[in-house]
Amino acid sequence: MSFLRSFPPPGSAEGLRQQQPDTEAVLNGKGLGTGTLYIAESRLSWLDGSGLGFSLEYPTISLHAVSRDLNAYPREHLYVMVNAKFGEESKESVADEEEEDSDDDIEPIAEFRFVPSDKSALEAMFTAMCECQALHPDPEDEDSDDYDGDEYDVEAHDGMEVDTTPTVAGQFEDADVDH
Image (cartoon, rainbow, N blue to C red; front, side):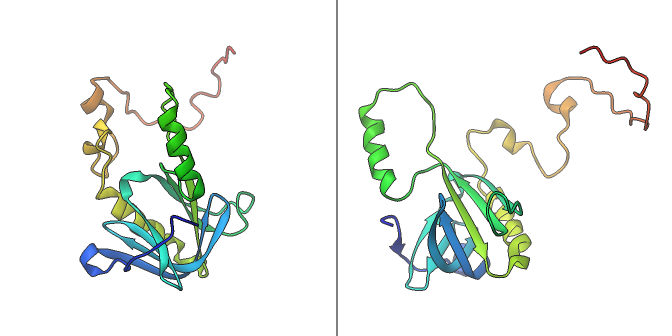
C-alpha cells in the first residue's frame, strides 16, 4: 500500500502508553501484515517487521472500541474509525473532490482493525486509547470542554428541570400504552 512509510516508532518523549507486538493491522478489510502497535499521547502508530507503517493523529480518529462480535470479524480486535482515506483510493478521491462542486459534507472514512495475538491485551489497548484520545478534544465540539468524567448535568447546561426521583420497580406496569 502506498501510504505505508518508514519512520521511527514513538518513544517516551511522545508519551508512549502501550506497545503491543504481534498485532495484525487490517484496513477496510485488507490485511496489512503483523507488526507492533504503538499507542502514544501524540499519535497511534503501527509498524511492520521491516519498519514500514503508518501513524494516525488523534483528531482524525472519530471512534475506537473493542470489538468482540465474531460475526463482524472472525477475531476480537481494537476497532478504529478514522475520518480520512488511505491507500490508492486516497489520491483519486482527493482529485475527484476537487473537480466536483458538491454540497455534500460527507467525510471520507477508513476502518482499521488491530488484532493482537494476545487478546487479553485488548482492554489495556482500549484504556490507553481512551486516555490519549482525551488529550485531544474535538475543537468543533462545544460540549467537549464541559465533560470532566462525571455524569452530564442537564440542569446545569440546558436550563431544563429534570425529575431525579429514582423509579420504583413495577411503577409503570399498569400504564396504558396508546400506540
